[in-house]
Length: 222
Ligand code: CDP
Image (cartoon, rainbow, N blue to C red):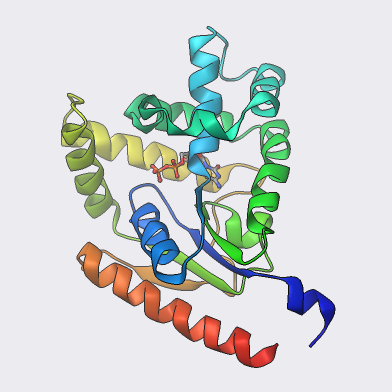
């Protein structure tokens, strides 16, 4: 066993498109394997919301990078980050390479903590933690994702139609997949988990089994 292997923790990367179930799965995995969880989407949401509050233009990459540099972990609990508008703003600031650079160290430090971590997002398995021992790419049919997100936003008190959410999801999938830097991609070594036909319990159970197998391989290789 090398010193590096000895020190490195077990990292779980959970990537996937909007409303695929990745956030819930990441939280369940964190509880199951006793690891801290970072929802990296909140970082981008926070940058977008801070800029909107300050009246900044979301296309202004210098202002967006400045907001990203100043961001602190205690700002991530704000319920305002969970709104539909925050999701849209997040995906618009997430295209700026300077914003992604500014958020890189925070995410890598989280991934590198002793004992390991779970991170969910779009580029965890490809850019943030390519060394992760367990990688999942969680997806679902766009119609299923729209239905799930609609229910969630209505519970939060937002007034919108299913068609609005279908359009949001389509726009975000396109923008997140087409951007030049760190586009949403399944890492070659990520296990694809399509949750279209699954309940959240079934999806969480499938994810746990995938991660258990990866953990057993990791332990036996140390
Ligand atoms: O919850 P949902 O999947 O709708 O979104 P999220 O994970 O909170 O991410 C919001 C937006 O942030 C995404 O549409 C991406 O544009 C961006 N994002 C990213 O670029 N990279 C990440 N690692 C996480 C989120």
